[in-house]
Length: 287
Image (cartoon, rainbow, N blue to C red; front, side, top):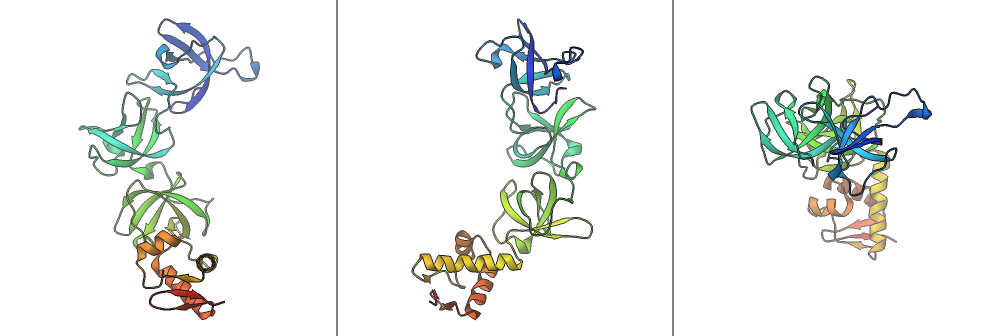
């Protein structure tokens, strides 16, 4: 079986003046296998050395505008089933085209656009194979393909987020390239941009299954971890730090990757535990 839009390991079954005919591998050496019933052409200019019949090669398989299969040894920037950041290169009355690394651009039809596409801008795109047109297409309307909930995620899990949209509530993100979630503005203590990747923590899974994400741990373990990081930093710098509760949020984020509010709470906890002293210009470790 040839998987369109994916990288396939195929077998050379014949050579023609214009290229090689490739077919799926014969499974279990079955002499009755029909693996050669469907073949894909690999042009000669795709390989630097000649290929022998029965040798194998890894190729990306796609379809052209007529729906015919073709193969290339250089896969594009996005495969079918993936969600990536791509640049829009043109727009027409029926859709927009994106640069995905092949000679022919990836079409995102109007019906699959979340918002109108502006050429030259970057968008988060999901690639899929459309059986109706027999073509690989893209979509920026991600909820057609990605779910807003997951039985495999739990509160407190560390996840990878890809920012794909901004709303009145916050920033919409793709979680682990599979699910959709939201980072509320109140939890976005650092600037976020469309197309940016960032680590996150599952903050809450609502009753309807939708996922809220935070940029930092807000549970007891997260607070303890930050307090210990502050103590370790003080130990490493002679027991003194000029990063106080009056410091700029950016300076705190650059040093500890947390919000100023979380940092101030951690300092307050350490102060109550009589582990540090706090002055306007510095905090000091009590030994």
